[in-house]
Length: 119
Length: 115
Image 1 (cartoon, each protein chain N blue to C red):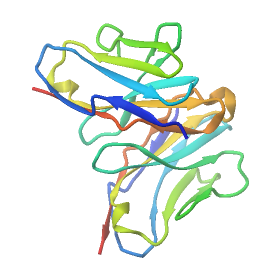
Image 2 (spheres, rainbow over the protein chains, first blue to last red; image 1 turned 90 degrees about the vertical axis):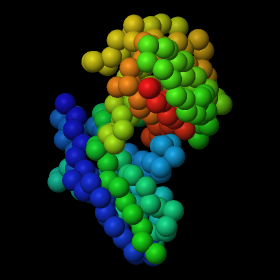
Image 3 (cartoon, rainbow over the protein chains, first blue to last red; image 1 turned 180 degrees about the horizontal axis):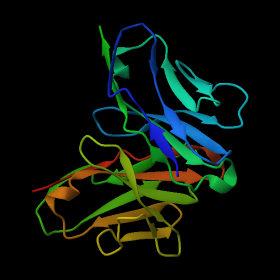
Image 4 (cartoon, helix red, strand yellow; image 1 turned 30 degrees about the vertical axis):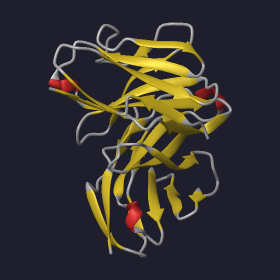
């Protein structure tokens, strides 16, 4: 069974600094995908970044990067140059399998990390 | 990316009544999912909405309580039936598409409060 663990219920960071949000996972499937979402107080889930288990390089999307350490089963999100608008809940999620045949598979979510960016 | 809308965005309902939530996507998508997020908690999958057949429900969720329709590839509804205060949650529609295997997008959510 899949399991996602986010051990930081809350994190604080100063504006313009970088912050790392931790995520570890457990799966017996060698093929899987890892997602990060941002959820502001409005409740919407905003897709940030994706990493496939066979991807050779760490994923990056603008100020977001994913520190993927496969042997340690970790997929930490790094936010560089934090902004006040980054204050939100962040969820790590996993989907078993990759590619077209698995795009219909469920996502398993971690418990989330509440990030607060201080001015 | 797919643009997803949900109606209503929020509602306050009385115990024992039912509410139907609509999810509309701006393009045809293969898979549509319904998630629930109870206050202060993470997301839990309710069911997968299948076009042309019955929805596939996760353990702990039943069709009588959460009937789902998927009449075409761009639209789905979730009904929360015979509501109780424990049903107060954010309900989120999500879509996946074989044309975009590395993504899964969510609608803006429906914030439901049951009194």
